[in-house]
Each structure stands twice: as C-alpha cells, then as structure tokens.
Length: 257
Figure 1: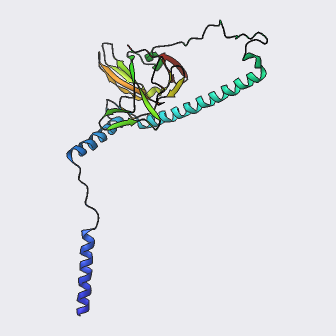
Figure 2 (figure 1 turned 30 degrees about the horizontal axis):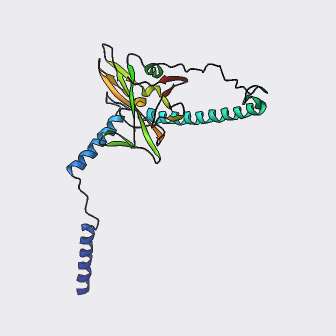
C-alpha cells in the first residue's frame, strides 16, 4: 500500500512539472519596439490591400511585373550576345573596316554625324496623360530609407543611385494614376557607359509600381532605385533613362529643373 502511494505521488509531481513548462520566458516588446512592428505591418498591408482606394498594389500584378522584368533582363542579355557575335562575324569578313578603307589608313567614321537619340518626355514614355512626370534630380547613397520601418541597402561593392521624380496634377480635376498596370521596365545609362536596370522594390513611392489618386495641384514624390558599382556615378555628366512599356521603348534625357 505504501509503495502504491509513493508511485501515485511521483506521478502527480511529474504532471505538475510538465504543466509548469520549462521554456524560456516570453520576450516582451517595449512600447517603441511594438510601435515599429505595428508601423511596418500597416505599411505592408497598405501596399497590398485591394479594398483601400489609396496606394493599392495588386499582389498578382506585382509578381507578374517581376517576371516581366526577369524576362526583359534575359532578352537584353540574348540581344547583346547576338550583337557581339554579329560584330565578330563582320570583322572576320571585312578586317579592313577596323582601319578604314584598305591602304588609306583613314577612319571611315570621320566626318559622319553622330546619331542622336529621339528623346521624349517621361510622362509620354510612361503613357500617362493629365499628369506631369518631372525628373527632379538624383542622389548616390549606401542605403535609402522611405520610412523608419523600411530600408533598402546596397549590395556588397555597390551603392544606390536614386532618381527622384515628381508626379504633378496640373489639371482642374482629380487624376487617377495607375503606372503599375502598364508594367514598365527601366534601364539607366550613366555617362553613356554604365547601364543598369531599376530594382524591383515594395516602396509605396516606387515610380514603377505607383497607383493612386492625385488631387488638382498636388504633387506625389516618387523614386527609382538602381544599384551601381561604387564610384561609377561619382561624376555624372549625362543620364539617359530607357523606358519600356509593352513593346514600345522610349528614351528620356534626364535633366533636373
């Protein structure tokens, strides 16, 4: 009988220990940390909330845009590869072209006018009407912060070149702006040498994914973010932005006002 009592007591003690648990104490957030979490969550939900009239981002459309940009990158790489192969083939067939006409030692390119790009305004390149898209300048930074809850850092060996573009409604009525639906892609040429494609971000003010209503006379500030090698954009003489919407490609010369 005594043995049974001892056994029962041991079982009760084991059950008590199991119920009490042996994990670490739950970490409690401070008011400041809790505010950061709430702010970031609200920021993310706002981006993809279909029922919200301002700043709506369709998740399916956003992912589709990323796929299009990847396809665009592959297409450009394939075109570049084909062009290089074609140039090598032409050089093999006509080796004298590298030094002008045979026996003359002259450069055939001398005296020929340089081909100029056909530049268009940014809003025309984007295919938006009733809204002025105005380039306002750029900055080169190691990290870009839209708010306290979201930051973009440059990858190792790179820095961020951030273009600032204002979307201004100069009309007398509310303008609906839906750039995301056009699925644009952007490529930036710096000093006609450095060529990079815009990063895909979840920034609410990303020009490529902007959606919203702009009141008469109001201006919305947007950005495009590019990753460039450190020092490559230290001295910028010129910048051209290639904008591709569907099958149409346009060139925009960036000159800040």
